[in-house]
Image: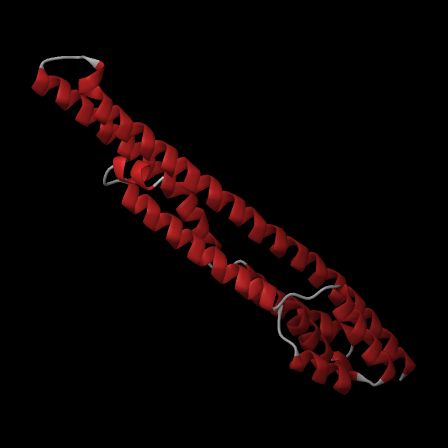
Length: 203
Protein backbone atom coordinates (compact mmCIF):
# COMPACT_ATOMS: atom_id res chain seq x y z
CA UNK A 1 0.00 0.00 0.00
CA UNK A 2 2.82 2.38 0.87
CA UNK A 3 4.48 1.70 -2.46
CA UNK A 4 1.24 2.33 -4.33
CA UNK A 5 0.87 5.61 -2.45
CA UNK A 6 4.40 6.65 -3.40
CA UNK A 7 3.86 5.56 -7.01
CA UNK A 8 0.82 7.84 -7.21
CA UNK A 9 3.00 10.93 -7.21
CA UNK A 10 2.64 14.34 -5.61
CA UNK A 11 -1.16 14.54 -5.76
CA UNK A 12 -1.45 11.68 -3.27
CA UNK A 13 -0.24 13.93 -0.44
CA UNK A 14 -3.00 16.57 -0.60
CA UNK A 15 -5.56 13.75 -0.79
CA UNK A 16 -3.99 12.22 2.34
CA UNK A 17 -4.18 15.63 4.06
CA UNK A 18 -7.88 15.83 3.13
CA UNK A 19 -8.45 12.38 4.65
CA UNK A 20 -6.77 13.40 7.91
CA UNK A 21 -8.64 16.73 7.87
CA UNK A 22 -12.01 15.01 7.35
CA UNK A 23 -11.41 12.30 9.96
CA UNK A 24 -10.37 14.96 12.49
CA UNK A 25 -13.73 16.69 12.14
CA UNK A 26 -15.59 13.36 12.20
CA UNK A 27 -13.80 12.52 15.46
CA UNK A 28 -14.70 15.92 16.90
CA UNK A 29 -18.37 15.46 15.97
CA UNK A 30 -18.52 11.91 17.37
CA UNK A 31 -16.92 13.01 20.64
CA UNK A 32 -19.30 15.96 20.93
CA UNK A 33 -22.38 13.88 20.13
CA UNK A 34 -21.55 10.83 22.24
CA UNK A 35 -20.52 12.91 25.28
CA UNK A 36 -23.96 14.56 25.29
CA UNK A 37 -26.01 11.58 24.15
CA UNK A 38 -29.31 10.93 25.92
CA UNK A 39 -32.06 8.40 25.33
CA UNK A 40 -35.78 8.63 26.09
CA UNK A 41 -35.23 7.43 29.65
CA UNK A 42 -33.50 10.69 30.63
CA UNK A 43 -36.58 12.78 29.84
CA UNK A 44 -38.82 10.20 31.50
CA UNK A 45 -36.74 10.49 34.67
CA UNK A 46 -36.93 14.30 34.56
CA UNK A 47 -40.69 14.12 33.96
CA UNK A 48 -41.13 11.82 36.95
CA UNK A 49 -39.07 14.23 39.07
CA UNK A 50 -41.35 17.11 38.03
CA UNK A 51 -44.36 15.12 39.20
CA UNK A 52 -42.89 13.81 42.45
CA UNK A 53 -40.44 16.52 43.58
CA UNK A 54 -41.33 19.64 41.61
CA UNK A 55 -39.69 21.90 39.06
CA UNK A 56 -36.65 22.91 41.14
CA UNK A 57 -35.48 19.34 41.66
CA UNK A 58 -35.95 18.57 37.96
CA UNK A 59 -34.05 21.75 37.10
CA UNK A 60 -31.12 20.67 39.29
CA UNK A 61 -30.99 17.25 37.56
CA UNK A 62 -30.92 18.89 34.11
CA UNK A 63 -28.20 21.28 35.25
CA UNK A 64 -26.07 18.36 36.43
CA UNK A 65 -26.22 16.78 32.97
CA UNK A 66 -25.04 17.96 29.56
CA UNK A 67 -26.24 17.60 25.99
CA UNK A 68 -29.04 18.95 23.80
CA UNK A 69 -31.83 16.98 25.50
CA UNK A 70 -30.89 18.14 29.00
CA UNK A 71 -30.47 21.73 27.73
CA UNK A 72 -33.93 21.72 26.18
CA UNK A 73 -35.47 20.21 29.29
CA UNK A 74 -33.69 22.81 31.42
CA UNK A 75 -34.95 25.73 29.32
CA UNK A 76 -38.53 24.40 29.47
CA UNK A 77 -38.49 23.70 33.20
CA UNK A 78 -36.87 27.06 33.97
CA UNK A 79 -39.92 28.79 32.48
CA UNK A 80 -42.36 26.13 33.65
CA UNK A 81 -43.79 28.17 36.51
CA UNK A 82 -44.90 30.78 33.93
CA UNK A 83 -47.02 28.19 32.12
CA UNK A 84 -46.78 25.86 29.14
CA UNK A 85 -46.71 28.65 26.56
CA UNK A 86 -43.65 30.25 28.19
CA UNK A 87 -41.94 26.83 28.38
CA UNK A 88 -42.76 26.14 24.73
CA UNK A 89 -41.33 29.49 23.68
CA UNK A 90 -38.14 28.78 25.63
CA UNK A 91 -37.82 25.41 23.85
CA UNK A 92 -38.23 27.06 20.44
CA UNK A 93 -35.44 29.51 21.23
CA UNK A 94 -33.10 26.87 22.63
CA UNK A 95 -33.77 24.26 19.93
CA UNK A 96 -32.28 26.47 17.21
CA UNK A 97 -29.05 26.79 19.19
CA UNK A 98 -28.93 23.07 19.92
CA UNK A 99 -29.54 22.15 16.27
CA UNK A 100 -26.69 24.43 15.21
CA UNK A 101 -24.49 22.81 17.85
CA UNK A 102 -25.34 19.30 16.59
CA UNK A 103 -24.55 20.15 12.96
CA UNK A 104 -21.46 22.27 13.67
CA UNK A 105 -18.45 21.47 11.41
CA UNK A 106 -20.48 19.11 9.19
CA UNK A 107 -19.76 21.43 6.23
CA UNK A 108 -16.03 20.72 6.60
CA UNK A 109 -16.68 16.98 6.32
CA UNK A 110 -18.79 17.59 3.20
CA UNK A 111 -16.02 19.76 1.77
CA UNK A 112 -13.50 16.95 2.32
CA UNK A 113 -15.79 14.46 0.57
CA UNK A 114 -16.15 16.79 -2.42
CA UNK A 115 -12.48 17.80 -2.77
CA UNK A 116 -10.82 14.37 -2.41
CA UNK A 117 -12.08 13.04 -5.79
CA UNK A 118 -11.37 16.42 -7.42
CA UNK A 119 -7.71 16.18 -6.42
CA UNK A 120 -7.77 12.60 -7.67
CA UNK A 121 -9.10 13.69 -11.06
CA UNK A 122 -6.56 16.50 -11.16
CA UNK A 123 -3.87 13.91 -10.59
CA UNK A 124 -5.38 11.90 -13.44
CA UNK A 125 -5.12 14.86 -15.80
CA UNK A 126 -1.56 15.50 -14.67
CA UNK A 127 -0.67 11.85 -15.21
CA UNK A 128 -2.08 11.90 -18.75
CA UNK A 129 -0.13 15.08 -19.52
CA UNK A 130 2.97 13.33 -18.23
CA UNK A 131 2.22 10.30 -20.42
CA UNK A 132 1.87 12.45 -23.56
CA UNK A 133 5.07 14.32 -22.72
CA UNK A 134 6.88 10.99 -22.40
CA UNK A 135 5.53 9.96 -25.81
CA UNK A 136 6.72 13.26 -27.28
CA UNK A 137 10.20 12.97 -25.80
CA UNK A 138 10.63 9.32 -26.74
CA UNK A 139 8.92 9.73 -30.11
CA UNK A 140 7.37 6.35 -29.38
CA UNK A 141 3.86 5.26 -28.32
CA UNK A 142 4.86 1.90 -26.85
CA UNK A 143 3.20 0.77 -23.59
CA UNK A 144 6.48 1.00 -21.68
CA UNK A 145 6.74 4.72 -22.43
CA UNK A 146 3.22 5.70 -21.31
CA UNK A 147 2.81 3.21 -18.44
CA UNK A 148 4.27 5.53 -15.81
CA UNK A 149 1.95 8.45 -16.53
CA UNK A 150 -1.12 6.25 -16.81
CA UNK A 151 -0.22 4.52 -13.52
CA UNK A 152 -0.08 7.90 -11.76
CA UNK A 153 -3.43 8.84 -13.30
CA UNK A 154 -5.18 5.68 -12.14
CA UNK A 155 -3.69 5.65 -8.63
CA UNK A 156 -4.62 9.24 -7.80
CA UNK A 157 -8.19 8.71 -9.02
CA UNK A 158 -8.53 5.50 -7.01
CA UNK A 159 -7.10 7.06 -3.84
CA UNK A 160 -9.32 10.13 -4.16
CA UNK A 161 -12.42 7.97 -4.53
CA UNK A 162 -11.45 5.70 -1.63
CA UNK A 163 -10.96 8.72 0.64
CA UNK A 164 -14.34 10.13 -0.42
CA UNK A 165 -16.04 6.78 0.28
CA UNK A 166 -14.48 6.51 3.75
CA UNK A 167 -15.50 10.05 4.69
CA UNK A 168 -18.99 9.58 3.22
CA UNK A 169 -19.55 6.50 5.36
CA UNK A 170 -18.34 8.35 8.47
CA UNK A 171 -20.49 11.38 7.63
CA UNK A 172 -23.57 9.14 7.32
CA UNK A 173 -22.74 7.61 10.71
CA UNK A 174 -22.58 11.09 12.28
CA UNK A 175 -25.84 12.12 10.58
CA UNK A 176 -27.52 8.94 11.85
CA UNK A 177 -26.57 9.85 15.43
CA UNK A 178 -27.75 13.44 14.90
CA UNK A 179 -31.10 12.30 13.47
CA UNK A 180 -31.68 9.94 16.41
CA UNK A 181 -30.80 12.71 18.85
CA UNK A 182 -33.25 15.09 17.16
CA UNK A 183 -36.03 12.51 17.53
CA UNK A 184 -35.12 12.09 21.21
CA UNK A 185 -35.17 15.88 21.64
CA UNK A 186 -38.65 16.10 20.12
CA UNK A 187 -40.04 13.25 22.25
CA UNK A 188 -38.43 14.69 25.38
CA UNK A 189 -39.82 18.19 24.95
CA UNK A 190 -43.35 16.85 24.34
CA UNK A 191 -43.10 14.76 27.52
CA UNK A 192 -41.72 17.63 29.63
CA UNK A 193 -44.35 20.09 28.38
CA UNK A 194 -47.06 17.57 29.19
CA UNK A 195 -45.80 17.19 32.77
CA UNK A 196 -45.47 20.96 33.21
CA UNK A 197 -49.05 21.36 31.98
CA UNK A 198 -50.33 18.74 34.44
CA UNK A 199 -48.34 20.29 37.30
CA UNK A 200 -49.74 23.75 36.59
CA UNK A 201 -53.31 22.39 36.41
CA UNK A 202 -52.92 20.61 39.73
CA UNK A 203 -51.65 23.80 41.35
